[in-house]
Length: 394
Image (cartoon, rainbow, N blue to C red):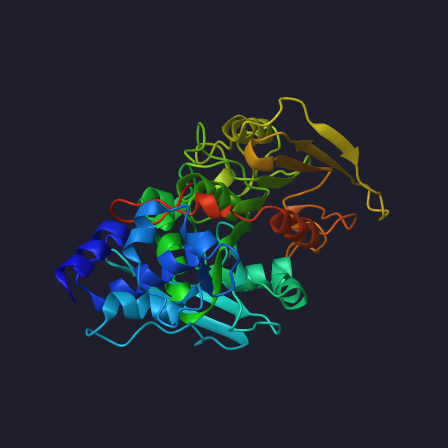
């Protein structure tokens, strides 16, 4: 590798001496510049980023006007190592992977849908489990694997932390919860490492990475939207408020928040709830109003929402209302799905245990959030490369 090429790598991607790290960063840089996800960089995709354009001059070896991933990596690693290849290692079905985060080994489960095609970038939905739960409980509670197979996105279920590695797990969502918060576990770093690792074994569309979760998992969804807004396109938390004074997002993040007015574990109006994480003296939850208004302000949305009553399809004593705060930057919006008399549950699915309260069948959280996610991919000009020097912004 020439000195000029090495300096280019350091300036553009912040790459160190590890070949594996170089591969990872280059792969991510390529995917973020590839705005239409066709696996090639056109002149239109490269031109807006002047410094980036300079670094890849001459990479189009066959002169067809497009730069493939192989040409891109060969340009930087000529004479040093084999070029990068498209990530094709994961197959349809379930997988468990491990990543290092500081001194800890963290795990996550992956469901690869039946429609997965390694030749095309796939959306990803991260599903954070609730406090005291685990990925297996979220698979059963949400039914998200079935939605994944229907729609064709990859589902990721991270493991939280706890004294028992298999159950009773929590995430550190900034102001909650339990073991993870008390020990200051870096779950933001874990999420970043998880996404980096997933990109090495699957063809991930980095502009369509979304997050959801219930309770502590909903709280974690808000937190990663705040702290990883360069990686998370949009979120749809369920029954878990924003547990910060205000989000720290570097870009507007579309939010769809689901919450039952009868939620006794994370009360709609805030305060202490039931359960180990919510009882008095442990966690004082922020209100839904604080959550929504914080994101409305952060996203620059209009102060007054459009209010629509959703069809009352089921005779379950519950009604659902959709409140939409629109007018945010580049069409960003904040949506509240308010479930009258709804409990600490996943709308559309039966709760695992009756003590969590009632779950409406008027709506499907999975269907509504997936439609919302499809409307709100990350803009190509918002992708940010980590490391030194360059952000891919127009």
